[in-house]
Length: 327
Image 1 (cartoon, helix red, strand yellow):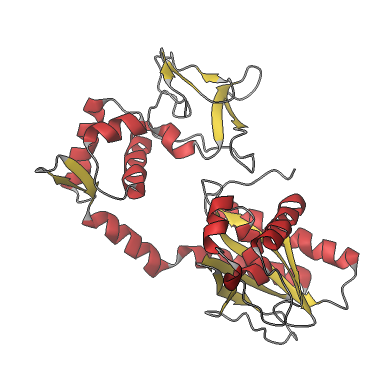
Image 2 (cartoon, rainbow, N blue to C red):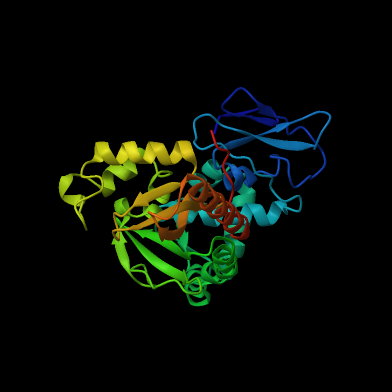
């Protein structure tokens, strides 16, 4: 983010969020620290003749964002979350001065927040090092998330509806290394089981779900996942065998807004997938539908792709994520 000037913030792209306001509107960036939560590729600006605060994409980030934040943000809660998110991104504990500077909070506010978080175990103070890190209560939160599996619970009903609309099997998969792991499978009546059962791992570059996720990762991350040709395993002698070939496929995914695969996982079967995004527009999963390739004409494929993309957008909203504008 750009440097602070006067009572406001100068953001990339030439827009300026004027924070010279004595009120405490939760949407305005003068609730310092909120920007750390909402800056996923976007900046805030005032707009006359419409909603008091709106959002425009920052060209340094792709894809552009087209979502609206809820109007009931509580500044104090946003500041606490900004501190916790900042600490979670650090490799080691950090000084309070660094937290204050990087999150954009007054130093006194930073110390008050850290004291409160430390009292409840979410932050630990290392007095000898004069640094702060995450505490055991933060670990308990993460453990609770894993136990409750809310993502799978939120996804099951939309996937079942997707099966009803398309008449084909649907899956939800997450990226793990250079593989995808299938976490939900919804079968259509009369359709045979697929290789993509719950818990199965498949090469991400061969699956539609994997490609949908990989297409929205930074190029450097994709390169780290597939450093050389040995990373491109094959199942049936088809599919990309180099980073150059994979990049070409991922560029097609970004242009279309969804990913496909044609018999690369199972001969005779095709799949269409779209990504589910988190609140930073980062892909966290892929929704896919698999169908017999030879019996699906172009119109049918377009119909299925439309339903898959709609389901992915619904899941993105359900998990508090942001949707992307197709280019």
